[in-house]
Amino acid sequence: MIAIGIDPGTATTGFGIVKEKDSRLFHIKHGAIRTSAQLPLEERLLYIYDQLNEYFSNYSPDLVAVEKIYFKQNVTNGIFVAQARGIALLLSAQKKIPVVEFSPTEVKTALVGYGRAEKFQVQAMVQRLLMLDKIPKPDDAGDALALAICALQTHRQINLR
Image (cartoon, rainbow, N blue to C red; front, side):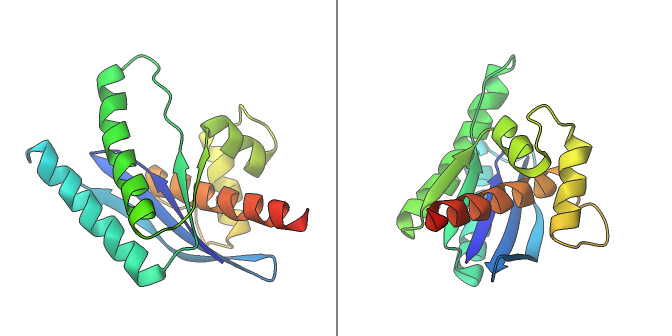
């Protein structure tokens, strides 16, 4: 089973692709889709769509994991994140791939065992679980890998019941 995790944003959208086989996790690819603030919003969103669509087509994920949105103080930034998140949801619907959503607290709890863990603790666990030589960068890509791992763990737990 293959999961793609997506950490949405209009400036940077992180993605991480993880495969699970025989209860083992394998890193496939991770990175960041970056857009220029100089471009009109619709062009930035189209670029994110095109890049994610390419990853969906090339890696044929069975699950899509997306971070839930919480508006804290900067509502404008939250709206931009929501627009990029909508692209991931649209692609998932178009390709008929199930979506699972996780809050940052759920990801931290699933990977580290503590919902208020620091980002570096989550990143270190991602590195360990995927047997990477170093912590994945940028942070958005590491977060996306964490989402993909959570999706696979959740799917495995549901199937064991």
